Length: 388
Image 1 (cartoon, helix red, strand yellow):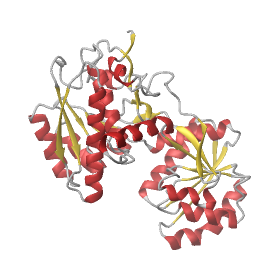
Image 2 (cartoon, one colour):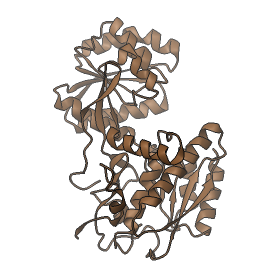
Image 3 (cartoon, one colour):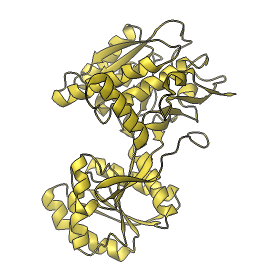
Image 4 (cartoon, one colour):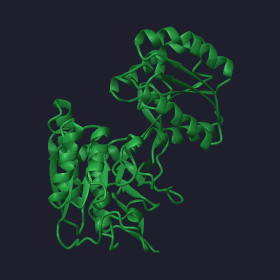
């Protein structure tokens, strides 16, 4: 096997972060995509987005399409025939859209967004040699012909746990709500801590309600303090219980100067969260801010306004498959090509698809300092070793 750089990078040299492919050519790879592609012609690609799922869904759908078309314009020597299909917010619509897309000749499906819709789309075209690169971050739907592009809890937890342990804070306490999503987050943090060589000094949970978290905080604080934890990892987001935890835990004896607060979810969305006193000096992970900033500026210049926060997934998806099409790999949509270890470099930073259908993304570690986001450990620009 030989290493090569994608031709698709040429058009993006004006960016600090060049979007393209860092890949190994596939040798004797199993074919997921159903054969060789003729990339001398425009390759049919389906984009499944929730256009009719309500106002918020329509905004996201348009933003993903705009970002995808921006990526298409940056490809060098590759032409994509992008065909957009509406999934609404219903799995059955997503399944029908995926089936129709394949009937129309699509060789790869980008989307859908919502987990159940993405799962339904994948099932609808299973066995037909068409990979589905969903915009979801739910690992439960990954596998087979379905890959998830969204940043998963496992990726965030591994990044933050590894950084915390490297800073000498290797006894980590986990606080989570009693909900399926946050219990998945709890388990991801536990795996991340173990993988980084640290230890979970304890866990505590609370009922998912304002009353539930407020009533539970004194006991959570006592348990965390007695555990001797050096860091406290919270799975809640800024739209949920996190503001209560960050403000009330210090009032109940958890000193943020001694116990580092870490957020599994983004602490800078919405931007007003940066003003919360309890989140000052807290750590969290995010895509490379420099690359995202360049993408945001360029998107606004082309479309007259800022992109949806998840629009970069649409760009990254097109950039990745475009780079594969330009790579001289005989089967650019094979399992081996999609999951090659060196991954792709997108506007959200480096990422790679894994053989189980999940992904790994290179994230930065940031801290809120004086109501501003400060990167304290930059995002990696490449991966070491093969993906799993």
